Image (cartoon, one colour):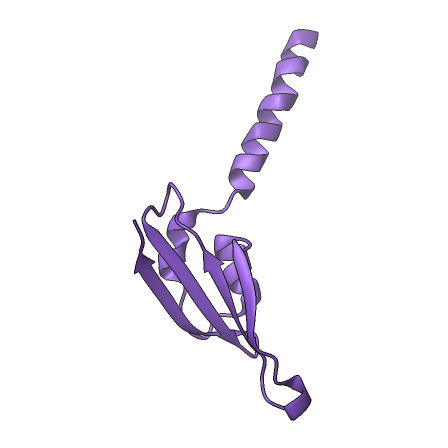
Length: 97
């Protein structure tokens, strides 16, 4: 019985982490108007983030990009998502080899 518990706990932990892992194939389903939170839930944290324009001082919306590098589930595709005021305004999917 103790051996069963020793093997069951690690197996459940591995299964839990696998369920929480983001599916890179979901990158193709990102649409304009989605919020940053929706994108995070759907495809996870970006590989690179940059602020394009921080116009808060002028009363204009902030603009930034999130970049997702190619992944085994989404090979040869670089995905760049542009946000303005926290919402997706542009999605670029580029083939990179």
